[in-house]
Amino acid sequence: MVLTGGPGAGKTAVLEVVRQHFCRHVVVLPEAASIVFGGGFPRRASAPAREAAQRAIFRVQLELERMADEEGEAAVVLCDRGTVDGIAYWDREPERFWGDVATSAEAQLARYAAVVHLRTPGAAHGYDHSNPVRTESAAQAAALDTRLLEVWARHPCRVVIDSTADFVAKLQQALAAIRREVPTCCLVHGPPPADVNDPKGLS
Image 1: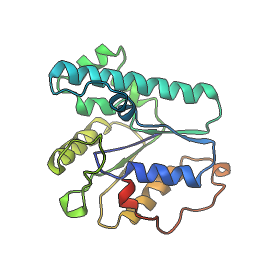
Image 2: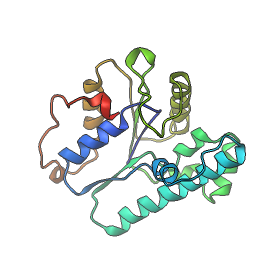
Image 3: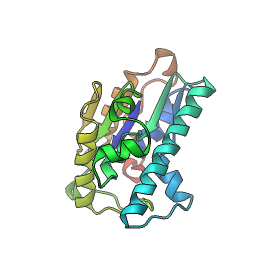
Image 4: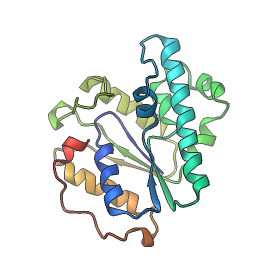
């Protein structure tokens, strides 16, 4: 399944709590974009560079998912974004992207059993600029969040969680949506805590 949403939506905090409160059969994958850009892939503004980056991110995401599947230990693989997210960052028509990576939107949507979308907070709800990989302003983040809503809109099992000033409530909604996809045996640590320490600092 996929956890997605615009920049600053709180994915990191949710994934950290999942790691702490679900068993090892719930495998949380790292974000492919962070691997690509953190590893030194050029982050340039030109169209060719942006397109090359999205193709690289797509292929890293595929291999992360393939690794988790082939290791055979996961009951649920929880992805920090999925292969469809790249369309929201793609400047040209989506068909060009799918042609470049030799697949289709339908095939990629079908990879995932469920999608949880965390809405990006606006300035009033504390959009966070602290992530070194994050370059978007609050307005740009909101626009990207809207595009992500659009690219995942056709998924038959999508949960959208709105932003709120109470991040703990948002966190608990996300965990409840994830728990519905997780086998009972994987909830070995019991329910999530009523709150987390400084959750906004993890977002």
